[in-house]
Amino acid sequence: HCLSTTMTIASAFKGTLVHCPSLGQLQVLEDHILLVDHQGFITYVGPADSEASVEFLAKIDISTTIIPSGGFLLPTFCDLHLHAPQFLFQGTGLHLPLMQWLNEYAFKSEESLDSQPELAKAVYIRLAERLRDAGTGAVLLFGTINNTANLILAEAMQTIGIRALVGKLSMDISSRPSYVEPSALSSLHSAEEFIDGCRDLVSSYEPHRRLVEPVITPRFVPTCSDELLQGLGKLARDKGVRIQSHLAEAHEEVQWVLSERHKDDIDVFDNFDLLTEKTVQAHCTFLDTDMLSRMAGSCSAVAHCPLSNSYFSEKPFPLREALDLGVPVGLGTDIAGGYSIDIMNSMRQAVAVSRIRDGTRKLSGGEQSLAIDWKDALYLATRGGATALGLSCGVFQVGAPFDAQCIELYKESNKGVGALDFFEPQSGITLGILEKWWCIGDERNRRDVWIQGQKLDVNNALERA
Ligand code: GUN
Ligand code: FE
Image 1: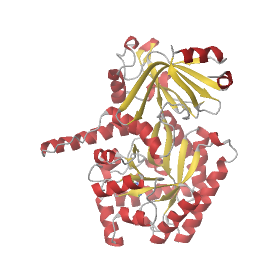
Image 2: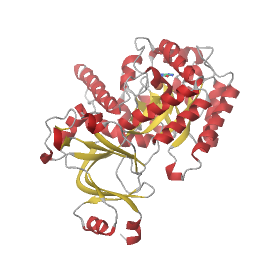
Image 3: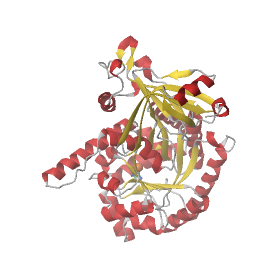
């Protein structure tokens, strides 16, 4: 603990830290010190009364941010699956089955942003602000076909300060003649152009301030020719970028792929090298145990979107089985297949769906529990999602970027904050109060958000409490 290290400290926090370093592990670190350097990385975490903490605090010349006793720091959430252009029609048309909904709502809204850059800018800035206010610090995004709009999306995320993996959507087959790329070749050219454009966009920032990166994004098997998928697999390898798509989401989609391509979804992706350790596949509800083992073997991750599944998938994702097999899993909102942008809702829905599965298991005499609990869900929403994206955030440890949210449950002037009216701070941040916040807390409890050590300008919070 030499002085030269302490001189580079940009911010210091003192109070309760809550995080989930691994599945099944929730740590409440009371009265801790956390130090962040000028590049936004955590350089120290330790109990406030330890010798090292006292020594550090004595040497640094910045004031320490005190997390009040009725609050705590938590890593920001990761959203592993969100269609940015569909934010425009969030919460409409959900009476339709998937393929019809795509044609009548999704493709139209995407097309409208591609043809109106000004509208795209307004929608994407607002989306970034809503993510920030919801405590989502990292997001894996589907964009549209057109790169003008995709670069606007990337810029909006970088400007507002959200860590974003942005996908230029690839599709050379479509049910909507005005919303499709003319050929596999032009689609591939456009995907490459986006990768370069997106990297260009952030090249003027220092490496640790670059929040946005491009992702290869075949929409799903039904909208992509073999030629396109093959080219995208190669492009991902050549450019070293991540991959995302939809896999085995709905009955009609799985059947469609079987009848048209004479293969399962997973075989198509695998065949074209699109099932790698850099891949995140949304949904995967129709994967059986063997297929989940293949996901685990390839180190491909799943974006579990329980709300969207309830509308479009006819059945729940086998979450417990996937976790037991070692598949990396995080949570997604799937805006607008899911209508809520708040990962807290995804956590609640993931637990609720798993409990219904477990009830069904019990009634049929099965042995192993299929349920997850709120602590498991909190892991999936933070470190689980970050791991799936290959990010080192989602946990408070030395070397990780300081991507955090300050949750406040108590305010002197109005007792509890938001829905937590009867919380008294003397009892501290217990598992009981954390469960209560997890169940009924909301944006009013979110006081601040930091990404890479930089505080974002959160609009919600206490004024409305
Ligand atoms: N499959 C292909 N495209 C989409 C989409 O936009 N939303 C969902 N939920 N599933 C898809
Ligand atoms: Fe989706």
